[in-house]
Image (cartoon, rainbow over all chains, first blue to last red):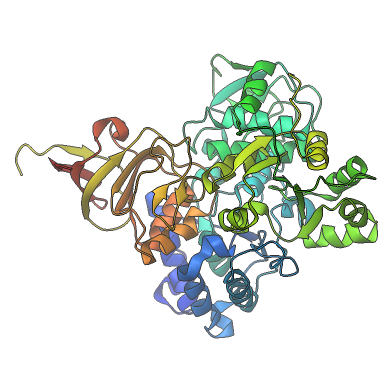
Length: 419
Length: 141
């Protein structure tokens, strides 16, 4: 890779060991993907929950945090993904004994490095929405696909520690989504049934994601005539990225780089894959549990924004959870403050549900938490969460927000009406 | 060495390793698919469900899922619960970042579908700097 003078200095260690390590790691990845050089980035989004980081990762973070301040400080604004522990709820949720201590060590290290502990996966809605053409180092698949597709910004998946490397160097290897040629459409999908609910949008993302053959495929959706709102696009993108490892989509007439089909395809777009209501129904029906009993309802992944919390409050007003069924809602800390001030949290928690801040369910030692609480049959409005939790020993089912609330109140998931 | 079958690929990450292949036409994500404490595939829908991946040359189709693998591979190696190498038809950035961080051998972009070219139990040598996978002999296991 071609290095600038400043990059050479970092590589030689003249700007401290953390930056030397960071750029060494980035060069290895850049060579793997044939990057010619680096591109400066304006912000980083770092995923570092305790389960993912592990003891080996904590040791690396603490070593960096122990470096002299001039060597360890991030060079660009760096925000954080959800944490694995809400300290106020850790014992009540029966998280592992070591979780809180590991969490404290990680947070101490990240703060020493200069991270802004925003603890959210929807920073693109609540912190600083990216802008067209902005180069980023986003380390959450949902935030990355939203930034690339809806905002027209440019980022690869900077997974976990890679976002930290970007924060320490202020740049990333220039490959993939940073290059115009990799942002072109590759697969056309015609949507003849526009999703009705955010959960349906997630299902659509899952349907298309399962058909993606690699990170390098960019699906193009045609037939979406009314512009979906930010919540629908959030659910769609998060599920598409989760099922397909897909960093970008185009929605013709909706997303900024897709004013027309001709704008996103080089030459003939080929025949379209038709997506119908039957595909969405089949996706829902693919989640099977032992029976209709519900142990827990989770609204999370991505965290809920203020509009969604208002919808939850309206749906659950005056209702009480069924004995033996839990309900959990996660939201960013800043949204939690707003929701408290506006009375939304009190309305939700009056039902017995819990509003947790700065965490996301699957990042909270979900396997251990499920075993400790006897949670197995889970209902969620998030196709992404349903995708993840199958490997954690749960039997997930996907449902709309209204169905989720009904399941929490009755302890049973009612049969879904076909689309 | 004459007659040894060699499969070419893009240059990879990591050092030369030998091991027994564990092959499936399915995706890979450390968070989504694995019980990393027990060292087995834990997603019931995965083609390798219930099987141990520890110290195997893991051969799968594509990278799937989220970003956590970039952290997890290092912790898996530190705890002795990692594969010996990871061979994918197509990696994504997360796999490359995780392999570099963990010093785990990773290769992708083979001249043929790698999940069809190797079979479980086959003994292979993975040479990421040369971009080669060399078939040694089938294991009797």
